[in-house]
Amino acid sequence: MSNTTSNSHTSGSLTDVGPGRWTLDPAGTSVHIQNKTLGGLINVKGTFTKVSGEGEALAGGGAHGSITIDATSVDTKNTKRDVHLRSADFFDVDKHPSFVFTATDVTPVGDGTAQITGELTVLGKSSAVSFTAEASEISPDAVTLTAEVPVDRREFGMAVKQALVIRPVTLVTLTARFVRQSS
Image (cartoon, rainbow, N blue to C red; front, side, top):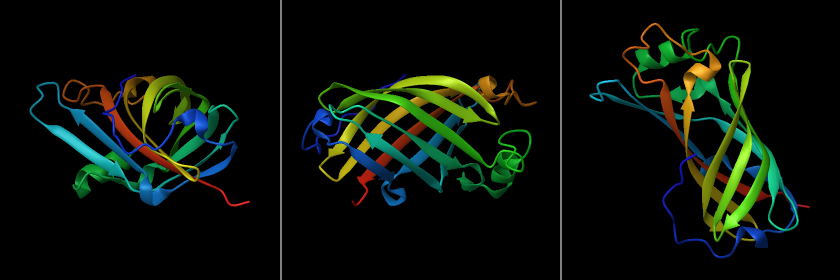
């Protein structure tokens, strides 16, 4: 969907990443959300503090994998709002404690960029997602990709009573750092 800002810390091409199993590095990974009100006066921002994942790089730079976001770990720096986000009005964490993005195809499309297609599952509902990510780190043992992905909450049944106040599209900014698994 949206591209991210380029970062010049890459030291190679995504097609140079050798095949193998990779694990998400939680310390080098972040998931931020941003949502504006219809009037644009308030910009609600938050972070998910618990993320895990894994993937497999294929010969030639392609890859596939998954990222799991612990929905209970949302932090907007407002306890009352966080409790509401975890409720059945939004994330319904009692029934659906995590969101999962499964990347079915990661294809290098340019120097340091990749087209990613897959499926996002939220509240037990899945939707196809496609976006471009940019690499800020490419080495034999680590790859960091960043993307901004607009997510329409209505696709997952998150049409809350306050729908006239909060815009339905949330911008998710994901920075995912994968490290090669030891043999």
